[in-house]
Image 1 (cartoon, rainbow, N blue to C red):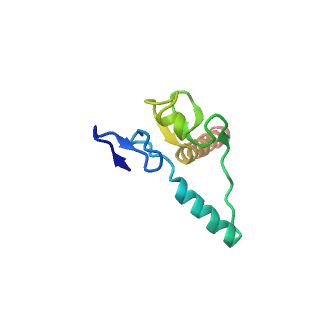
Image 2: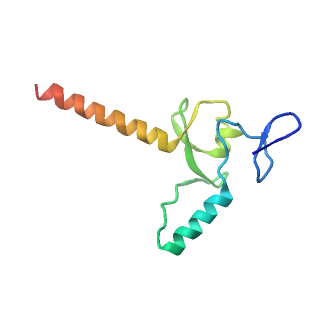
Image 3: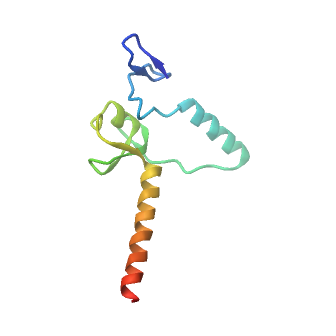
Length: 110
């Protein structure tokens, strides 16, 4: 990422101001990885996209409790709110679910 003269971080592709806590996806790198995976016969599942911005839904707004795209999180309706990567939220929720299941089994089998 680069900085403008005012010290604001900019996207290296479009030069839009971005939040340093939520860096934009490196679209070029994603395309390279996709091509390499297609060549090797592996294709990763594509995340759903937000039709208005045509960006993948890869972030989670902790305050609004919804999945959002990178633009919504950096310059859209969720700018300034607590945003987390979907993969981190998934891992956290998975652990919480296992903890609840363990607690349920302990309380019902004792």
